[in-house]
Structures are given as structure tokens and as C-alpha cells.
Amino acid sequence: MNEKEILKNAESIQPELQRIRRKLHQYPEIGFDLPKTTDFVYKELEKMGYSPKAIGKSGIIAYAGGKKQGKTILLRADMDALTLCEEADVEYKSKNNGKMHGCGHDMHTAMLLGAAKILKEYEDNINGTVKLEFQPAEEIFQGSLDMIKAGLLEKPNVDAAVMIHVMTGIPLQSGTVIVSAGGITSSSCEQYHITVKGKGGHGSTPHEAIDPITAAAHIHIALQEINSRELEGNQFGVFTTGRFEAGKASNVIPDTAEMWGTIRTTDPQNDVGELIKTRINQIGKGIGAAFRCEVTTDFYDFCPCMIIDKALASDTLKYMKDMFEKNAVNMSEIFGDKPGGGSEDFAFISHKVPTVCIFLVAGSSKDGYVFGQHHPKVKFDDSVLYLGSAAYVQTALRWLDEH
Picture 1 (tube, rainbow, N blue to C red):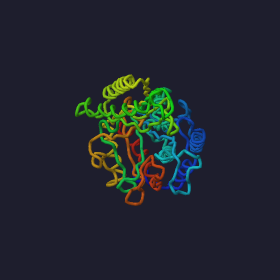
Picture 2 (cartoon, one colour):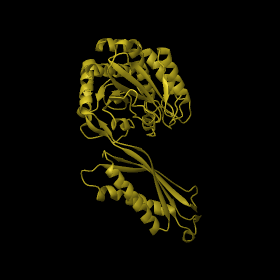
Picture 3 (spheres, rainbow, N blue to C red):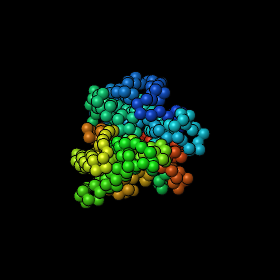
Picture 4 (spheres, rainbow, N blue to C red):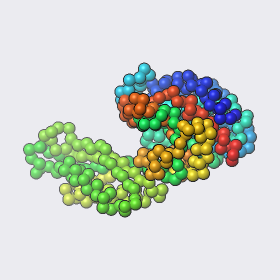
């Protein structure tokens, strides 16, 4: 099957892909709690002739090929949504209040199901095995690691791994395929929660209370000094407090104040992240003691930085250019060589096997797609779904043929 045949086959199932995507979009689910989504994916795979298997807490895998000796390549799609109230004006708007596919994982799931359909038709000629991964809990950085621990990369052992992620709200033509360059392409991420305990009291008698808000505010300001005064000039470390909560009434000093945020670095060993965590603890306890408060800090949901294999990235770019010609580009040509600040839990796999990321533009800001991912008004151009399916198939078959 050559590039033209793959693309033609993918285009022929575009209406079906759109149906699947819009169905999934209406019933978003979050984290590992994906009963409707996983049931839907199971049934779709079974209709194609697959025997899908449960793996981990709520992941799904299926196999295409395996009839000929060869290597194994993993294709991944994430399935979970965001805790977000949808404000996008679309006919197929979310029916699960407070949940929304605002990152495009419904697009990914539909595209990989499309790839599964094409691969099944060509199964006898696959030179090796294609392992299809449908992953939960990407948004909380737990799904990938959970599936790895459950044996995702084993039996057969995975030799290469591929993910596709859609992009919208950027000034590039819909349908543009972007292949990540080699090296570190996205940062690690870890979340923190700081709790400051004081002593509540009446707003008119602050001397009888111990104000946790004042202490928390000083901690928040002091943390900014880590970046400006403690990291070397060539070290990348960003931490942001995105949520600050304390009290319910304007005339009451509360007992506690809390802060939540994220730490991001591009250090594969995470030494910079460990330094930041150590200093957050020390600064919190020190300022807490000065203000007579008890301060505790918890860290959770760690995801490492993404490491892209240079050889696999080079091969994939060649495959995409052969299929999409001028509509396929190297990420460094668009965004430069600096790693992105976003994080992706497929990074856990990138530390185990050669990995590549393909990005598909699904909505140009020049065509009215003005909101980016994770915004309640974000929209995705699902007319490009077949391109994603074709990209999955092309990469898998070409890589297996050549290796």
C-alpha cells in the first residue's frame, strides 16, 4: 500500500471519523473514569475484527499485523477530557456538564480508530506488529505510566512509539502536519499544593488571630526569587501558582490559606526540578515560622520532559513529506529549536523507547479558530481527521518496512 492508496482509503472513511469524533465529543469523561468512552472504543474495534484487551485501570490495546516477523511500533491516542464547561457554539456540544474535550483527545481517538480500520484491511502484509494504544488520564499525567506498569511496552516489546496531537488557534493552515525535531521538545511538569495553617479570628481583632493569608502572600512573592536569583542562566525552570484560596467572608480571618501550582523544567534528570522543590519547602517553612504559621507542601502528578529520538523523527518527517509534500514541515522550522513549555505524559514512554510526536493543525486562527486548547470556547476543524489516520498508518507501515 503506497502513500496515495493510504490517503485515498483514509479520505473514504472521513464521514465515519467525523461521526465518531462528534459522538465522543458529546460525552466527555475525565481521568481514569471513562466507562462510556472505553465501551465505545471496544465496540468499534470489535466491529473491525480486533480483539481489544483492557490494560491498567482503563486503557485499551489492540494488535494489527503480527503475521510476519518484524519489529513492533506503538501508535497512541489519549481518550480523556478536561474539567471545563464548554462554551463553544457547536451542534455536538458536550452533554456532560462541567466536562469538555477541550484538548482534542476526541480527535485523537477517532483518528486512531480510523488507522485501525485501514491497518486491519492490510493486516496480512504488515512486516511486524502495530500495537494500538488508547490511553486514559493524560490530562492528569497518570495514564501513560499506569499502562507502562501494566505491561504496555512488553509482549511483544515495543521498538518505536508514535503519538499525534492536534493543534488549533494558530496561524497555520488546517491540515498542516508538523513533525517534532529530535531532542527535548517539551518540559516536565509536577504539581504542588502549599497549605498554610494559622489561627482564625474576627477581622476586627487580628492581634488575637494568626493570619495565614499574610504568610501565604509572602511565600508566593518569595518563591519568585528562585528563578531570578538561584537558577543558572542556562537552566530552564518555570513554576506558577495558578490557584490561591483562603476564607469565605470579608470580615473573618480564616484558619488556612492554600496555593496550588506547577513546576516545569527541561532537565532529563530533573535536577532543576528537585532544586526548586527543595527551595519551595525551605522557603515555605521559613516564612511560615516567621509568621507563626505551620506550612506543609505536597508534590504530585509528575511527568518528565519529552525526549524525541532524532533518527525516528528524521524518518517520520521523510514519511510525512512523501505523503503530504509541502504540507509537512519540521517543528523547528515553525517554532525554533527551544523546547515548548507544555507537558505530555507520553514522555514516560519516550524515556523507555524511541519516540516521535506528530502535530496536526486542526483549525487556523486565520479561518476563525481563534481559541487554543484548554479554552472553553475552543473549536477543532474535524475535516482533517482522515489526515491524522493516514499519518498514523503511513508512519507505522513505512517504519516497519524499513526496520
